[in-house]
Every structure is written in structure tokens, then in C-alpha cells.
Amino acid sequence: MTDCIIRDPRWDHQVEHRDWLYATLVADLGIELRHLRPAYAGPVDPAGDADAWLFVGVLERLARRGIEGSVTELRTYLRTGRDISLAVDALVPFLEHPEAEGLYDEIREAADDHQLRRAFEREPPSQTGLDGRAARNTADRKRILHVARESGLIQRDAAPAFEDERWEALLFQVADTVLTNESFLLATRIVVRRQMSRLRSQGALTWARAHAGLHHEIGGLALSMFTDLAEPSDAVRLLEFLVATGAEGHRFIYQQCDLVTALERLDHRPAVPAVEAIADSTVYSYLRKRCARALSRLSAEFPRWRAIEYLDDCEDETRGIAIAHVDLSVPACAKGLPEPLPTRVKIRTAGRLPALESPRGSGVVDDLGLPPGSQCCGQEGNGCDDHDVGGEHDQHGEGEAFVGQGAVVAYAVEGVVGGGAFGVVEGVGDDQGLGGRG
Image 1 (cartoon, rainbow, N blue to C red):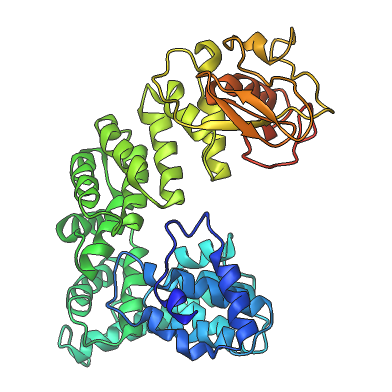
Image 2 (image 1 turned 135 degrees about the vertical axis):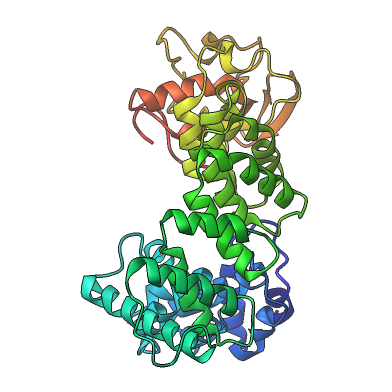
């Protein structure tokens, strides 16, 4: 059991819920949680601590069940600094937990504003307030000044350099020193990264351009700043970074998220082939959502091809992007697509819905232009042989039929626009119906 958690066997952690099963087994078997720590004992990956995803998910489940020590173990993981976002996201729901004394201050110390906003899905809670954030900012600057004095970057008796331009110049010097030397305390490196990520000046963009990279801490920070601050003239270089990450497999999925979003913001249409390649290869559904959003803006072909494919995506926001952009002028949304069709969508043909009305309101499903035999045969009982668009026969349970994806797309999208059913494209096994039931 511990080996399964330490060596995550999942292909895509976002569409599997093995963490629930493993948490149940850990609780029932009484496994000591400290035995799971080897899940994050390997080398640190600046692209994100994928090795610990399952470990953190299991501990979240255990914390919800009230298993003693689970929040404490999550706090232990936070203090390693391996993946601050992952740890903070997991811990925020347990701020009132008996094991969470001092946790909020610990999270504030470790996380930057972006990580806090993501974790709380809004500005940090009211107890921080503007005064709390200002106090943390002042404390951060004092710590950085102390490091600058100790490192000989400024004289020990030098006055504090808190004016914007002087502070920024000093911060660049400290970053070059601290982020290239792992002998500095993790807390110090976190503070430097946090202060650097707040910069929005032209000087910050110049620094980011000069230091952006993929394979070291300072390069990763600079690349993150570069994607935020980049101007249209930077698009070619950002695309080069995206292509380079694609050659590294799934190692740089977070950087790919930032790069894809930046290329969309800059309206860089030559990026379409690279974004499509990332969309096809990634195992990270959140990145696929970003690719869908970018392609919906950059690619003229998106409404006639990718949008149809993404109607069946596992992420609801990705499906929403597809629904908003799909081209309903494509005959039946199926004719003209190459074989095999990219996906298939399951629809309900239960007795309560004897006829599925077309978007034109003039008949049943085959009014959309499906080939003969493409709807349910109508046989009732323990099962029925249903035909798909290609003429194949599939055995399904009672009241269910598969049809080629394009055959249903026109109805599904029209239904959403008309305030009707989303359930047609919502996936397999939903109880959502049509005509407003969804």
C-alpha cells in the first residue's frame, strides 16, 4: 500500500480518484503516515513536485476523515518548499483543524500573493487585510536587506533602500546571488522570489529577458516573469521556449501553461502548431484547457475541428470553450470529418424521452442528417444493438445508444444556447436529461 502511494501509478491524477481508495485503505489498515514520506524524498523538480501529487491527495482525504496526524504531515511537506502551491492548496481547507495552530501565518510566510489568491480563489482572507499584506511586505524587505548586508552587496551601515528604483536595483542583485546559491535558507529564497514576482516595471522585463530559462531556479522565476510582462516583440522567443518544453516530455507542464497563455495574450498565430502539439500530448487537463482557450483565439480551424473534439473533454471549462466556438454550419457536425471520428458521445434514449427533438424542432435525431440506422434500433429489454455513424454495432445497456460524436453536437450546442440540456455532451452515465432537465 505504501509503495503504491510513494510511486504514483496513475496516468492522469485529475481524472482518477485513486487517492480516495488509498486513503480509505491507509485508514483501515492503520498505516503510520510517516511511512509515506519517501514520496517526496527524491530530487526537487523546479517544474513541480509531481512525485508527491498522490501523497498529498491521500493526506487531504485522510484529513477530511479526521485521521490524526494528517494535517501535521501536510505541514511537514509545506516546510520542505518542494511545491508551495501544491502544499498550500491542500492545507487551506484545514485552517480551523486542531492540528493547524499557527498554520495561517506559516502559509503567509511561504506563499506569494499569486499562490494565496489561487488557494483561496479570491484575495487572501480578511484577517490579512491590507495592513497584514503591507506588514509582510515590510518584513520581506527587511530580510532581503539583511541578506544584502551579510553578502556584501551593500554596506552594513547603509540606509534602507525602499524607494522603488533603488529597491528594484538591489533586488536584482540579491536575486542573482541568492537564487544561484542553494546554501541560502529556503525561507530567504521564497522571500526573494515573492518580491521579484511583484515587479511590473520595464526594468523587470529587461531582467526577465536576460535570465529566463528552464533548468535552474533563477531561470524558472525569470521565465514566469517574462510570460507575465512580455511584449509583442517577445512572442518569437516565447514560442521557442514552448517548443523546447515539448521536447522534454511532461517535465515543464506549469511553464507550458504560462507560455501558452502568454502567446494567446500576444495574439501570436504562428504558435498554433506548437500549441496543438502540446494539447495532443499533455496529460494535464488544466494545460489542455489553456490550449483550448488559446486555439479558440489563434486558430481559424478551431471551430470546425478542435471545438468538436473538446465537447467531450473531461474538464467542464474546456467543454464550455468548445460550446462557445463550435461551428454549427458543419453539416451535422460529422460529415466531412476524417475517419475515425475523434470521440463518441453517449446519449439517453430512455422511455421518458421517446423522441429527441432536433434544434430546428422538426423531427427526431435523424432530422440532423444522420445516415440511416444511426439512431437506436428501438429494441427494448435487457439491451439493444445500436448503430453508430460508421455502421458498426455495439452492445449497450437498456436505453443507451452511441452515435458518432458529430451527430449529437448540433443538438447539444443548440440546447445550451436555448437554455436547454447540457447533459447530451456531459459524459457517460449522467442522469441529466433534455429539455431543461440538465
